[in-house]
Each structure stands twice: as C-alpha cells, then as structure tokens.
Image 1 (cartoon, rainbow, N blue to C red):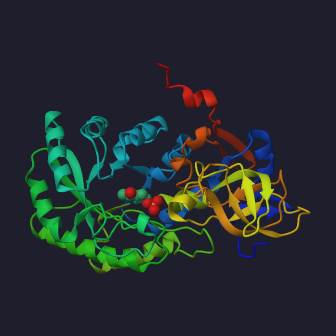
Image 2 (image 1 turned 180 degrees about the horizontal axis):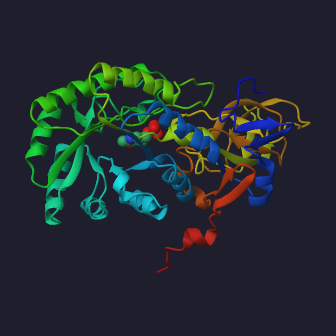
Image 3 (image 1 turned 135 degrees about the vertical axis):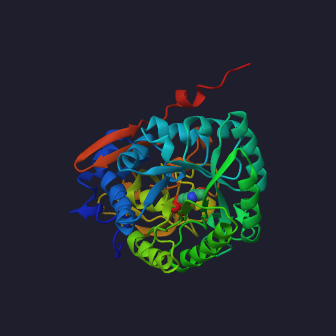
Length: 425
Ligand SMILES: *Cc1c(COP(=O)(O)O)cnc(C)c1O
C-alpha cells in the first residue's frame, strides 16, 4: 500500500477502510451517481487559494484563476465568490465566467490566436487586459478596438527564456515556444504598442510553464521581467501592473513543489529589493488551485492476466483523463475501500478506448477484483476540461463536495446529448 500522504490530504483521507473527501464517503457517491465520476473538494480549492492570498497579504495583488485547468461552472463560481479574477484563453471561457457570476472587469485574456470576433466580445464586456502574444496580434487588436471606438488595455507577454524544467509540452518560457514575445524584441514591441491609438499599455506579463516544482525558474524569470520593466519605463511607457503567470506544480507522485505562500515570500522579497513591491501584481494559477482538490472515481471492469503484463481494465479512459496519454503523466490510483480480499498484483491500469495510448497508470501494485472501485488522484486540473467524446463515450458527471454535503454540478452526458447537433442527409 501507499506509504506517503495522499495528494489532496488533509481533505482526502481514509477513515477506517473508506476513502473520504471532506466528510463524504466516495463509494457512496459512486453508488449514487455512477462511474466514471469526478469529485472535487470545495475546502481543498479554497485552502489552495488561501495560500496565495496569505502570500500576498498587504500587497496590491489579485489572483486570476487560469480557468482552462477546470472550467466547470460551479468551480468558477467557488473562485468568483472567493474574490478571484480569471485568466481566459477563448471567448467561450469568457462566457463561462459571466455565466458563473464572475466579474468580466477582472478578466485577462491570454492566448496566441485570439480571433477578431473574440477581441470584439472581450472589448464589449470590458475586460481588464489583453495579454498580447505577438506583434501581428497587436496590429489586429488596435484595428478592432478602433472600429468599436474603444481603446484596448494591453499587456505584452514576454518570453524570459528561462527553463522551467518541466515536460516539454508544458514548458512555455523558452525561445523555441510559440508563446510570447522574445525578450530582445520586447522594448520595441512596447514602443509600437504605445504609438497605436486603439491601445492603452497597462502592464507586462509572462508565464514560463506548468507543473513547476522549484523556486529558481520563477526567481530567474522575475529578474528578467523586472529588467524589462525598467527599460520600458525608462523609454517613457509606464506600466501599471506586473503579471507573473501561473505554473506552480502540485503533488502527483510525492512531488514537493514550494507552497504558494513560501514561493511568494521569496518573490516579494526580490520585488521589494528591486523597488517594485508596491506595484499592482497579478498571477494566473490554474493547476495549483484545483489539481489536488479533485479525484476521478472508476469501477474495475475486468482483470486480464498476461505473459508480460497484467491489465486492470477500468471504466475511466483517456477521454476522461487525457494526461497520461498526452504527457506520460503520473496519477496515483488507490482503492475506495481498503478491505479487498484479492492478492496484490502489479497491473497496467487501462481504459476501454481502442488505442494503446489509453492507459492511466503503469506497473501499479493493486489488490483488486472486478467490481471494485478506484480513485485516480490529483484529477482536478486538466482532466475534465480536456475530456472528449472519443469512442462516443459520454463525458463523466461531476460532484462538488462541501463538508458533509455533495452537489451534482454536471450530469453525465447521454448518448442523445452527444448526437444532438448532427443530422442525417
Ligand atoms: C495555462 C496557463 C496558466 C496556468 O498554468 P498552471 O500551470 O495551470 O498554473 C497561466 N497563464 C497562462 C497564460 C496559461 O496559458
């Protein structure tokens, strides 16, 4: 059995033989709502947010939840009610913020491919800032804003060229990435932006990657960004805010990322030392606010012993939990009840989808038999929001736990739901 603490503790813990999320027995939720089922702890989300808020106490700072990590409406509602702004990457996400009761005036809009229609929508609702990622985008945004008789508030995403030492698919701050404007180009891009009548320069931003588990890439990036702030302001372009992006890692498999408040104590010390501690600060965490707050419940369908591998085939799959297939990512997989009589065996835990890439965990020692229930842990971020209907599998249902209460926040997708936009010729 597992020896280190469960990711998601203290909100996720065994009580006797039963895995509980806050005060709710997870096997009860599986019985009520079926599987696969995502379950999130409201307290775990709020305590992750509180670590940032403690770190920023006394500063002019705001957390903008990077909602692509988990964009379910009730999750957005929790963060909106807790005073968060949002970092969005599409106009669809903007409409989700509004539907969840979020404040559009606290939205920042990131992404390399914003369309004119998305820019118009964001200008009409009056978002806080466009995080512009290229010179071409600057020109288009200027045109769109002028056509509406507006000035678009902008920040330029600069690429500090630091190695976040994370998976190549989730590293974004290096020269070879599609994101942001190169450090060397940044000043001239700011000068161009300041000369365009449809734009108002308000800030600077960076985002160097995701699942970052050490402090040094952040400190390096901050130094590089502050060098630019100094140069841009020396050129007569004032910057109201500095936005340091997101990217803080979580515990998937005994990972020990810095706590948000400890990380920010170090970053604020550097900001103070360089004289920028009283600037308006923004950050865009996604994974670290929701990742360890969620689990995905699944039922064992079949055990399939083999010569080289034993397979444990479960009813969740790559369409529900795409991270292992996409990034060879690791999620812990544990039983919902500890009392199985089955012998411990090493399995590859796989889904039913017709792809060899459809695995959820490799070489896992489990005591299971058909019909047992498992939880895939650290499943609150980049799981449901990345899910698909591949193999015509309906998307899972979602439940939000709050103390001893649980609320269904998304019903399971039916076959009819999946076919509703199609027609025969
Ligand atoms: C994805 C993303 C984030 C959030 O990253 P996490 O690793 O989930 O914290 C923040 N800012 C931008 C621009 C992003 O694309």
